[in-house]
Image (cartoon, rainbow, N blue to C red; front, side):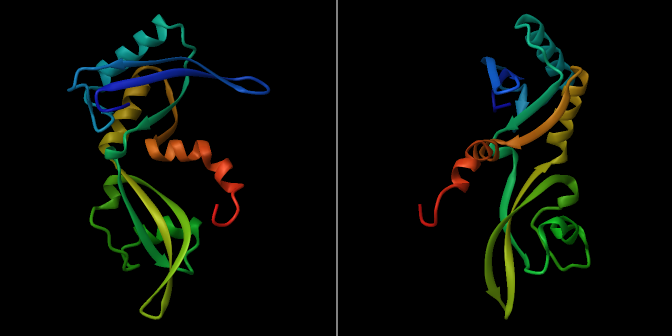
Length: 177
């Protein structure tokens, strides 16, 4: 979902490749989507079912990409003894002392360890990239897809989706390349 459009396509997993076809972009009324989320899940689900039928798309499992303005992003620093698998619990623990400018309990958020360390007040901290999407946005997308008979398998912000596609290539780079 974009700001005033929906891009869609079909991806088929063969034994050797993933074949992507039927890629289209459909412009929508400017009031149909807000920050990458359908404003009327029922109406959008009917529209998606229509697209699936007209284009003969086999659809059950879906991945959704939303525009960057749908998310709040910030680099946060946590004590270096907090492992990536414990970072979420640390952030949500009201006794940890972690502070954030928005209430994270009203969002769906993800943390990506950056493995960048800094010293602050004689303590070492580790950087994490926090991506936070309001639950209203994710709830509308989930509801829309459910009403269309689709299963959400992945929800990503556009830049994360693009990075995931090139991550293998960047992993093979040597230092300073």
